[in-house]
Length: 405
Ligand code: GLA
Image (tube, rainbow, N blue to C red):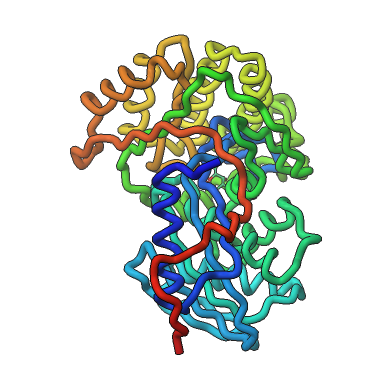
């Protein structure tokens, strides 16, 4: 199937960058998508359920082996900025942080797991909106892991192994304490489907989206402040709720367990726990509603999820509450809308009939303004396939081959 035009251009940008930095064409090119979560927020690190889909925005990684223990990286999206490090000894974080640490982290985790990975030339290019909460970093980690699996013949690593490796790069190397959702949906997404993920067993169940349903992602332009500190605080509060209720993880709790805790949970901890318990139930119900094509029920569950994130989990902000309300009014009972992702800014996701997209988009662009008076950015997406290799037959650069020093 021919790639959509923007994807072809992206691929060309990648190959040009690779050729300019290293000479010639790469041995492999891998792609991994960003994601949007339809429902199941902050449930992943509580061993619960999530229902994300991969979206048609990708990070591409081109790579060739070097055989000398050196890693060289060029980032097409950052004016061909480069990074360079050696694989001997411990791999350190980049002094300036940022994108190089995702590359360094994945290689550090591979080496740390005792897996063979030698020197490599790497180029990166992507079209996942950055900083919007659509998992551009997870898609970079997963695309790189897929490329390295092919280069170093690590065929025994399945999608879940790659996702776990990428998550460890994020947790242990970059220092972001995320769950498994973003990496696993990027690695294992199924075209045309959302994935119901059991974050305890890592079992994934594809759930087809109704044929006439559109996935709309609306960037609120609200800067995501305090994300790391508040995210970590919510994790701690969930752990307290579980511990004080006598369960290993909130996945194992019910509202009755939470209410029976002795001594009673503090009101704030009870609310945090209640969000997770009710969100897990909603996510399972949403998978059923979606599979049955029941968009009205799906809309009700998305509305309840948003209210729970706002009132019990306290991760929404007023501008996003307003944007969600606007979308809910515009869509009516034909679908739904809710904030998606970690919270405190980022995106809203809406499910709606494809026939309603134009009118809803127009209304959002006309009526919504961020606190800094910016209009929203609206993307209409389709659920894409998870990560994989691209056919390297397509990998001809339009630059002459020249070997870099
Ligand atoms: C971020 C994290 C995920 C998940 C969501 C909230 O995207 O990376 O692991 O916890 O927040 O659902």
